View 1 (cartoon, helix red, strand yellow):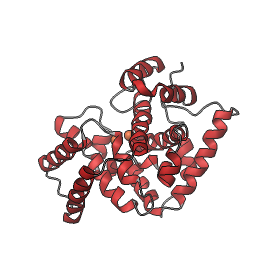
View 2 (tube, rainbow, N blue to C red):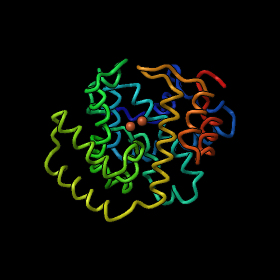
View 3 (cartoon, protein in one colour):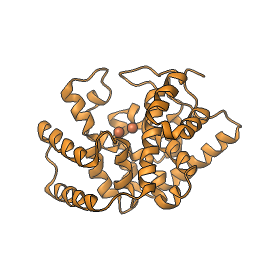
View 4 (cartoon, protein in one colour):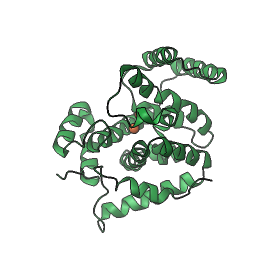
Length: 259
Ligand SMILES: [Fe+2]
Ligand SMILES: [Fe+2]
């Protein structure tokens, strides 16, 4: 049986040592964050398979489990600032915490490792592929999940990305069930024909921004928390068209080292 304390998990995510915080208690910003937590909690409680997947991630790596629970609400608040995004995405906007769910298939020693070999990095990178397997099962609940959440790692064009992921999988000897392989191939053909909706692309970019903000500002097994200024400079250089989103996160989700 899974512990259905999702609300407490989200709040606890912001209270881990050396991680991004919620706004100060009593502020309007904090009130909004608490309201958002309630909406997100309700969505997860209506989808037991999603809760089950998150529980498995918690067991493998508390660090990545709590990172997921910080990224989810930050992303939702960014989406709310982008006209039409939440209406388009529906409940998918509430489950940003699932963006790294494929990490539940990766060994704890890698997820919590202080330094990784090249092979271990490849295994780590494969998390997006593993996530897709879960997204296929979850898309009956969240129709846009398969399109949007993998976009938080857009380092390669979609076509290159598919090939590279396939190569990594073969190198690592990872075999996907043939049904999954078939669906990935079908999906790839479909994707080549049909460009993604602009709100899906924008939502993916905002997820990348929330994900990066948390990864840089919070402590990980392989790095300390970065100071607010360093995070800001790095992010402005990487996401020059989204300074509004960077400002929002800096103002509403304070850096653990202070300003
Ligand atoms: Fe990821
Ligand atoms: Fe992430």
